[in-house]
Image 1 (spheres, rainbow, N blue to C red):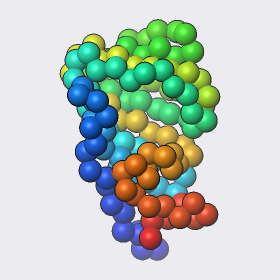
Image 2: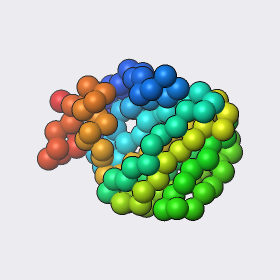
Image 3: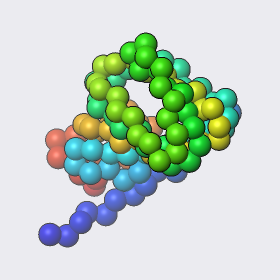
Length: 122
């Protein structure tokens, strides 16, 4: 079976202290890199998708359903679907986030077009 051609998105500035890069998705899961400057803050939000956040470098504080956790480089945090969460970068940090199912809002914002029926890129 031949792997379909997949394209990563470009780095997108979310705020002066945060940028993200959506990576080529699979059929039912996707990931993105988030580059935080120290003090970068991702406001509280929730989505129906399950999420894993793996801190590649740095240190973040994540509030998850009202509970606060400090996550260091080499550690991962699980975010269940529909649970409110926010994040604060305690140091310059690089985080790899993985979602399932696909977050079409992020894919579309990155210019990655997915056929919603099949999950494949054109």
